Image 1: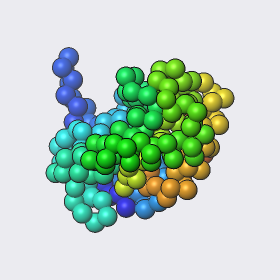
Image 2: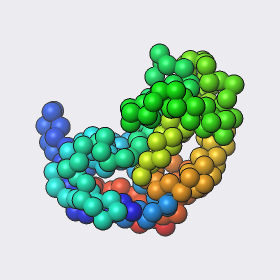
Image 3: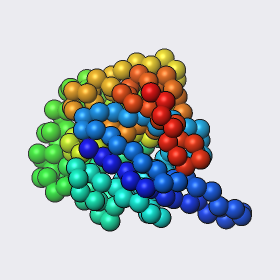
Length: 219
């Protein structure tokens, strides 16, 4: 279970003026559940994910996971996976090695990591693409590769940052249902940020809107 308690973060605008991205922000995401946070671009959604992942420092507050205060732990020790809206795949690696990358970083032997990646690609219907460069894949295929790469390390928490925003409307609709099913099957605790309320409602058990650094309950 993820708990955010009293998070504060002020954005300092170089052109002048400060504004609150998080103002005594509190949130609980129960184990195995998906929670969505809605808000327009610039509202602080992505920064919130980065604070949870340890990529952005807090001004104040606590990030707690399974009862342990982790806000001082470095990103690599948190065991979280952050999936970006632009996929962030490695263009110089083929599909199999993109998926295996996280395991290799965890010091799993490369041959074993590649075998596990191939097994996961089979579940995603991507076995025939294992040896391809990722930039040769369609947008939907790249998104599946990105999810497979996020899930292969069996992260304690999955953070999704506008995961379908780069795709067309029809593909977004089909992929969000596929992602929902795969995340549910994996029993993954998930926090989704998006500007799309239809997407948020279709994938999450609870939803909030980020307004002036605070979370407003939507459902």
